[in-house]
Amino acid sequence: MNRKKVGDNLKEKIGKDYDVRRCYLLNSGRTALFLLLKAMKSIANENNREVIIPAYTCFSVPSAIVKAGLKIRLVDIDPETLDYSYSRLESADFRNGLAIIACNLFGITSDVNKLQDIAAKNQLYLIDDAAQSMGARINSKHSGTFGDAGIFSLGRGKNITAYEGGILVSNNDQIAEKIESEIDSLRKSSGLSEFKAFNRLALYSLFLRPGLYWIPAKLPFLQ
Image (cartoon, rainbow, N blue to C red; front, side, top):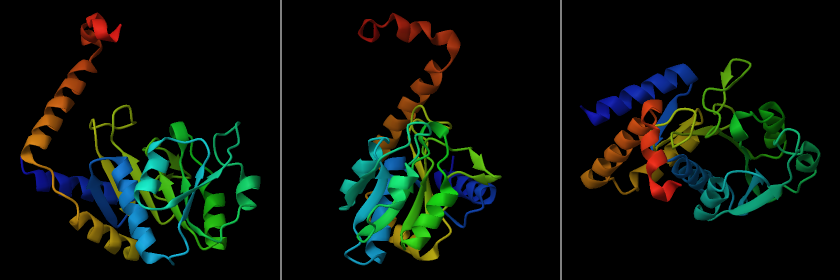
């Protein structure tokens, strides 16, 4: 199997189905967000270092922000929607803001139209984090394709899983050029690490079969 050809075919398919010009395959959604934030950081004014996120979200989001050398700005959520409390968001101080992240928790899409308006008004990037909402649509447009860039996760338990992996998409050419520079600087995976990942994926796929659930159920350390 030609790995590059498979990857290129997947990127072409995603680009066509999701109507995006740039698509990058990575080892996780967290890495995708980290590289995206680094790219945005390199473009923006040095005073714009805060990333706005909902106060309730996956730990990978603040982790990627800190790893990128940026600051977290929390905004409370609406408990009825798990989306931002927009009254609080609209009154936030964005003077040092770099980006707002739409987190789309549990596949429940954020109000991206409102987020786009807030981002545009305050000259912020909008990141559409579809790690938990791949396949969801808003008025026929895919979650993950709103704003300046979007990310997806192919990790365990996600809507579509490859055991691990992430996807980064964008129609913003300036951001894409910076992303490509960041990707070029990454250490390439070794043959051994890929062999281990393949074996983990094979086992994961095997034990997803209902007829084999009894095997992990019998393991004493899972009791």
